[in-house]
Length: 387
Image: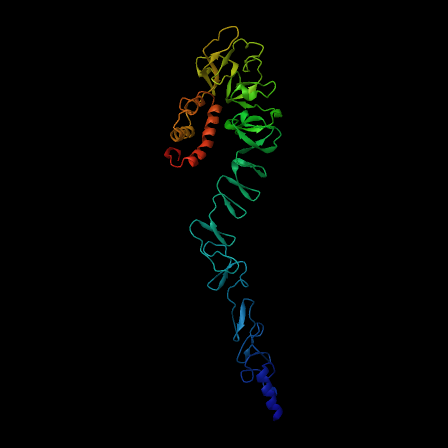
């Protein structure tokens, strides 16, 4: 009798023994759960239960609480790569349920997209190391680079452009409008053209030994180029073929320079004529631009023949820029008002020398005005014309 009572007391305390005296495990002798004939505590994932019922095996997403398998809930441990919504783990990659690390799912707002578990601004351009590059930019070296400064695996600095040499090798070169803008050793301002071989309005500073035409505004830009000291228009098929001038020999040959020291006179059918910038070259006399080529112009020029008079008072040259640029108009209006002087009108004014020469000269003037405007705006904040 004593041994039977001891057996029952032990089964109640430990909940881990078979029914006493041969009784099967069940509600009468097990407050946990029964795994076969063995009474278990009922609190393990593999043996979960209560009241002597058969033990249940909980899944990895559940816990055994008070003898019942219940959902473990959503947390960083159960949902490490997604987000939690209403206690359930979501993948966290949709605009309506965006998140990561088991945090609460978020709804991305207007103009946002869910990327990598985070709501970010919609990117119309290119994503670059988590940053959205604006349209017209490229991702180079984990940073956004303007397409105009993209140069293979390198992003050129502001004021530079990508230049390809005759072998296709690319490098960053300073942007220029004339050779005078360049410094040693890349002292030649070579014209840049697009895929259709049309001049884009500026050049790149390269080595003068590279074999490229070096842009100029006047002969002084060519002074350091041995054998190419005259500033003349480019010609093709005996007509003007460019909107800019380049350094060419001063030898009085057709479409070459005929400045002092040329040592000869222009060939028959050509006159030595000079433009407003003081450039003398062998060109055709003309009465209309139709005979000067599609990009040429019949301009009023001086005659510098050493023997015979010129055939005309006009010669074929580069089209002149006759209109003041908006940038220089703005700059001059600001300058005149702020400083009370019109000293720059003869250069940058509507009838100034900037607009009486080549397009390259006009472009150079416009670049100077554009560069000067910001400092004028800062220096004279109360002058409305400068703002």
